Image (cartoon, rainbow, N blue to C red; front, top):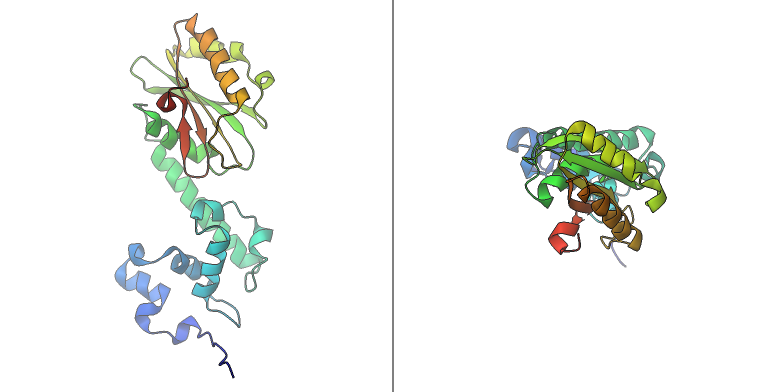
Length: 232
């Protein structure tokens, strides 16, 4: 007869195996993602410990915290042992992490390459479940003057007002522009519309001696640069 597996609650573990004690005595960096989430939820259910439950929740998001941050309260509550209070705690902690990264990336004041642009824009659009199109305006030293949302929703030529983009560039005294939008689907392949918009803005801006420096497509934690790919 097969022996039934028994899950021991965290309070019965050795001190070194308890997430809270481990954090207090060894520091935050030694904890796994699952252990950190286990601290948030506090307890598991009759079949599994908080850490085991946290591992299962993470697995449902491909063990990716960015993906986990996209889960709704109702989706989190589908896991046995996760009520509304625990689901809210998880969502709140992940949102704090997202905002912290956003504050750190506000320090990006100069765009020297596609990675700088990604670090600047990811906090704005990286986790969104809908598409947004953003413009970053730069001066002649490639320092960021201003960034603005151009459209929200689908990306089509009708949503891009070239005159508005260039009007704002002239008002700001910008000489360089970085375009960016996100793909919630996770694909980094530029669509025909993406390429058409880029060329439309590039052609119009050249007449005013304003250069389109790049167009980024962002997903959960990665990006594609038109400039790096040689398709600008």
